[in-house]
Length: 537
Image (cartoon, rainbow, N blue to C red; front, side, top):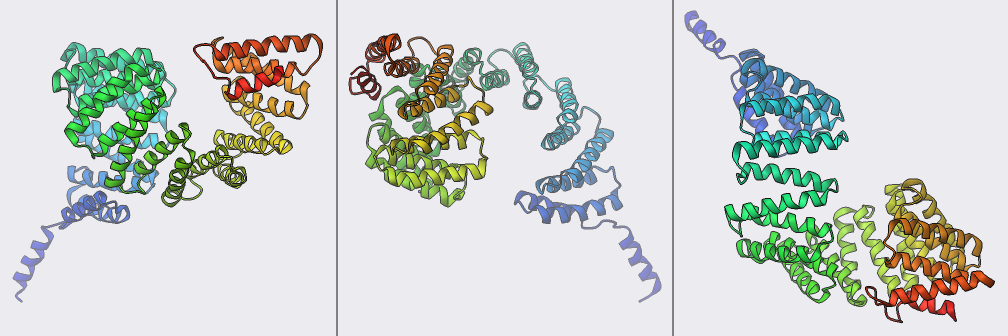
């Protein structure tokens, strides 16, 4: 080959530096999309090296490869290296595009997300404030990016326990949208919904309610009654009302959601089945058990047909039906359903998962309710061992499991072991949630009852009085829990002599009268009435 031609070929090759980096970068993007993080990392590293050599470190395409490599590393948990790359990306885009360019702000937001994952909340804070200020300066208050920036900063502030500042921020977002876009603009309504959700998360339910009502009414007017967004907002309002105990107000809203979702998505769509299950759960709370059962069976048939018997949604619905049947006293029908849930949870989650252990404990409780105490005991012990191993000895799930085993042993007459377990649960709750918390007081009352059964009246009385004092602070005077506590103390005092016995008789009679009167109207066969009547014999 002539020398001249060889020189031309060499010049041609030299004129194409970094050839193939587009293909490598695209391959990395494809692997990111399919979850092949290690392969994506390899291709992005090669693309980045070629682009740096051929295009320069600050070229836009080079920065795209920096971004891709950072994403691949983040997905693999290589957060420190990913952080360094995201700092480079943010600084590079700012230098090339400007401080308030949309891509610059998006890069800073991504860096802030990574810092939050690393627990570097104080480092993330000024970055998110900068992102919000940038979007507020360049976009409208109701733009999706601006609203997302408000929401992201509010979430970070909550993580920092700065709830008041988060609320003030969301109110500012809502007021800005109101002024700039109008009260019924969809951007404004998103800001209103964000504030309502924040208030609801922090227990300000009464403040959140009118905001959710506003959103639901406006979306229904704008989009129509069967629009997906309208139905979602009505569902959110219904859930809030339910959380406030306004069940009768929530019921027609949930019925509207079920009818709307079924009309738009079909009877067997997962959204329809979830809404149907929610309505059934509400009806169960209201005591409308027959309709609740019918709707739950309908939802379960749909879940089984569309998702399969082992899907989490199907198992949850099966569990709901089992609990509903148990509430109606249909224990024999509930038992195989609970067995099915247990097998399904163990298969999908593993035998030591909290969900599996909860299913195990629930089945044990049902067997105990059926009087199958010997069958229930090994399951209850197995659940306790699992909770203790996975959650630790002082976790509330473990303490609840200890209480369950103590109750079972008490029913079998194994009072000494039951007492030891009940003491452990009482001391654990006292240390973890405090001496006046409801579960602590409940455990004190249970321990007092065990002590009374064994004739340890002095310690039992001390615990009963302590529980009663706590319940008096917690409940209205007519609350059945408080009435029961007074009756229990009275029943114990009837075992004393003299004036204490007379005072106990008065307390027991008052408890019986209160429980048999409205709003409680308990029949003579109720276990509390039976116990108190026996104390007067």
